[in-house]
Image (cartoon, rainbow, N blue to C red; front, side, top):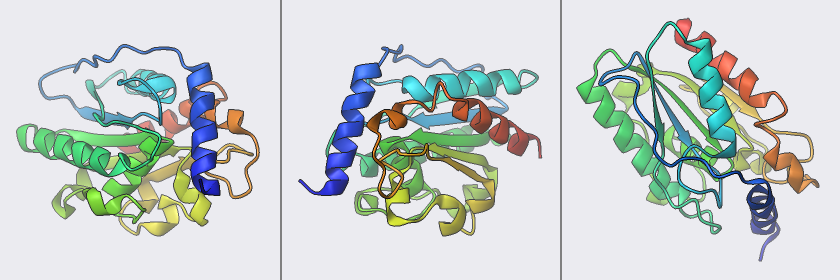
Length: 216
C-alpha cells in the first residue's frame, strides 16, 4: 500500500469513528429552485450529504434564506480505493446537465469533502488519477456555476488546488485544508484533522463564501 492510499485509509477510518448517520433522502425546495447545491460526501460515509456536507448545506440555506435552494447528494460509491471519484464526477455532471436543461434560471454551487472533493476536482476539469473514468462540466454550463467549495481535497498532496489549477473555476473556488490533515497536506500527520471541517468553522466560512458568490 503506498503512502497516499494509506493516508486516505487512515483518514477514512477516522471519518467512520466520528460518523453520525445522515438521512440519505435529500429533498428539493421547489421544482426549479433559484440555487441548486450539490455535495459529494467523503470516503466510507453512508449515502447522503455526510458529516461535512450537512452543516455546509444547512448554513448555505441560512445564508440564502431569501432564495429557494435545492440540494443534491452526489450518488457514488465513496469506496476506499478512491477510484469511485471518476463515476462520482459523471453522476455530478449528469445532475447539473439535467437540472440546467429543465431549469434555465437555476444557478449552481458544487462542493465536496475528501474523495468527494476529488469528484468536484474531476468535474471542473482538473486532472486526477480518476479523471479517466470521470466527466467534466460542459463549457456552456460554466457560467452557471456560481461557487465551488472543497474540504480536505487530495489534490493538495500534489501541491496544487483548484484555485490555481483552473483558470475557469479558480476565481470562484475556496479550498479548505486543516493543518496536519494527511489527505490534503503534504506531510500531514493528524488523521483526526480530516474530520473537523464540520465543527471548526470551515463549513460556515465555506457557505458564506458560496453565498457571496451567488449574490455577486
